[in-house]
Image (cartoon, rainbow, N blue to C red; front, side):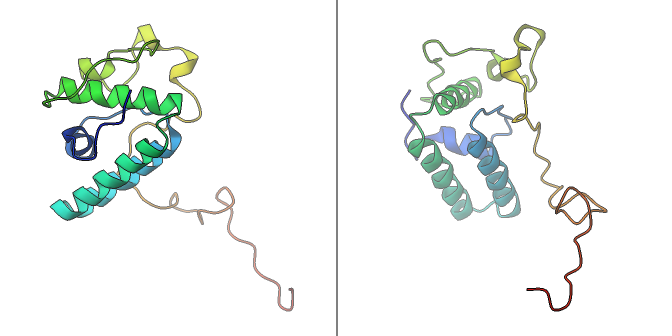
Length: 154
């Protein structure tokens, strides 16, 4: 599947459309969470255009990866379900079509609860109100306070 052009409405829909995507590409998960926070904090047209370009560039640079191809198909299915014009809702040959985006469901159903749908990379929803380390921890070293630096140690 080809990466939609940067001016395709599908990219804007990912950032402001309210649809949650279960992405496989870990870098896209991290970037999308960050971009959603940026757009939420500054919903202006200039910030949205910058975030759309950044998201598009990540997918364009990594389009050869199977997980990116799967995520592109998922995004296009979600855009088609949202009724965006020109959104190609076609699945890739051999790609698993769980129907989550078309059905509007966010989580896995009983028919697709295999090991390929869960694992250490599935962090669940992004909570824009929660940023930073867990309360009561330093955010470094698994919650332990940092060790003091000894005087004269180099």
